[in-house]
Length: 325
Image 1: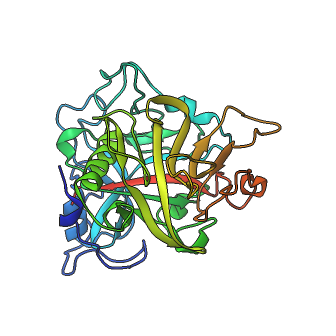
Image 2: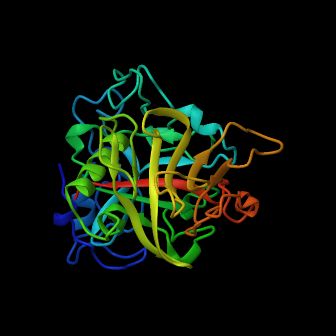
Image 3: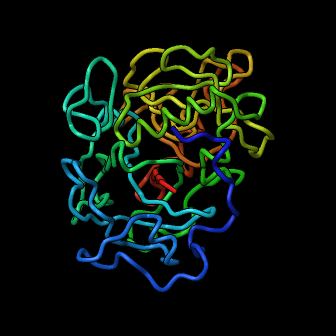
């Protein structure tokens, strides 16, 4: 399992920045000569669409497939998840208990992702709300996770700099730089949390959660997103259809936690919560990305948090990227 202490923070280059120096031109430009992420990075591929080498034994991706690639922070990344639905309950569409995981054989009482709703050449799609997901599986060797906001209305915008609302420069959220314990340090719990994140988004593990106030037990971990926002240092939780036990209405990449009870959560700062699709939302319903401020910490909902510009939409979609470098 990759360890946070071994992952470099990299540089602060934008998404459109170059990769490694001295490359001989882009690779992976056609299906007859696909490339790995490391090869794309070494060749200085600019951000864009490329053909990735097939993953042996994968039920969907065993042949070369198309990926959105971008260099960032001293490594290469591919896009593996997009959701642009504005409805708080749409995360129910990716809470799977059977025929799930990277090989479509996983299931049980916990909730899993599955490879679903792909576009041409098995790339992650941008033209549906469902969402679109690829799970590269265990042999792909994921080492790092990134979440950001993208504009899905044009392909060029998909690999451009962060779009939409980005409160306090919170995006992109990157595990190797932003995942810590509540003291701001790396320990065995943060490395456990990293393993759960990568396992979930590659399809080898089911849902989990971490909080700054938790005690590590089972699939709940004492860890947090530790990043400065407009109100200073914040410590946010992550819940992937799990809140101590399987739960369909909490899918938070990041959620603020009241300082008096740091295992509780309110709105989704990045992600989904709730059972409402349209009409009047319940108090804690949310479908948001890009906010990095505590909300509702006094015990009451901040209803303004349910409105634009934080709301997920086609031009402000939630987008997950993985690296195996």
